[in-house]
Amino acid sequence: LFWWNAAMWFVNTTYFDLGDLSGDRLEGTRTLPVVLGYAATRRLLHAVNLLASVSLWTACRLGVVGPEAAYLLWLHGLQLALLWRARDEDSDISW
Image (cartoon, rainbow, N blue to C red; front, side, top):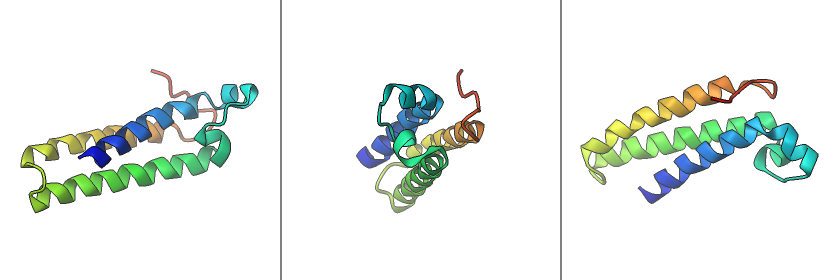
């Protein structure tokens, strides 16, 4: 569960780095989107989100965590929707 939680936080925090890419470039702040590029970072976030969701589902199926943990899978759908909003560097991902 620790690794699932860490993956969720990673996707959430890096997602907001996508929205401030131009400011980070201007100030010389080395975030993942600056270093890897926008599209590569987005692909990485999709991969981490998928891996975390499969891991949680598998842990539920194997009885490692209780079946109630399966309700947390809706969070991966939310992250998928947020990443869909961030299609390119010009996308407005603010709330």
